[in-house]
Picture (cartoon, rainbow, N blue to C red):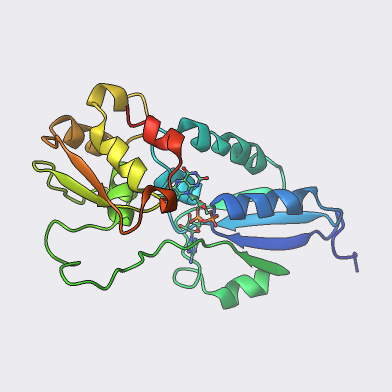
Length: 216
Ligand SMILES: Cc1cc2nc3c(=O)[nH]c(=O)nc-3n(C[C@H](O)[C@H](O)[C@H](O)COP(=O)(O)OP(=O)(O)OC[C@H]3O[C@@H](n4cnc5c(N)ncnc54)[C@H](O)[C@@H]3O)c2cc1C
């Protein structure tokens, strides 16, 4: 019988999730001494996780990391399977029958609830849904946001991204990675003021000075 980790019998690894963690894990495996094959499973039809659906569409520098992922994906021992939700459409027990190892690189996509009164009132949205909307995420791309009034963004890591996207003109956004639906809606936006509200001071804010400068 051929030895595990050789050309005759490569180590078969399944990677669940196609965000940065999944791709860098795949890269390390494909460069490793034992010969590995990597099959990547992603529940969305498209790869790259939050680099595609979280990172702001005008942040082309960060998004350009996908070029590295494309190179990894071009490896002859790498395969990508989209639209496969492990644990739902593909049970882990089935994967275990076909692979020597499984790496779960599923990220953390859920919202952090504030547990305050009014959190679920109409007009209150999580960053996950708004960010997913402007990035064309399949789950959020048809959401509707009222862009006729002032908007308050509660300060967090993504607050500046959201404020910047709301403040930019359609002309500025049209050359970015923004979804067409979001671009059309933002072109009609009547938002004239965006307030970022934080419970602590500027020193504790998660965004950096240059991100504030980018607001113009
Ligand atoms: C709004 C936002 C903006 C951000 N902006 C920046 C930024 O400007 N700069 C920066 O450096 N970082 C930024 N980040 C952080 C960065 O995107 C994450 O740190 C990074 O994407 C995490 O990588 P990951 O691979 O662990 O997870 P993810 O990118 O979340 O990837 C996980 C993948 O696993 C898939 N998955 C989950 N469950 C299953 C399953 N059961 N079966 C199959 N697939 C599954 C998901 O669909 C997803 O594609 C931002 C994050 C967010 C949310």
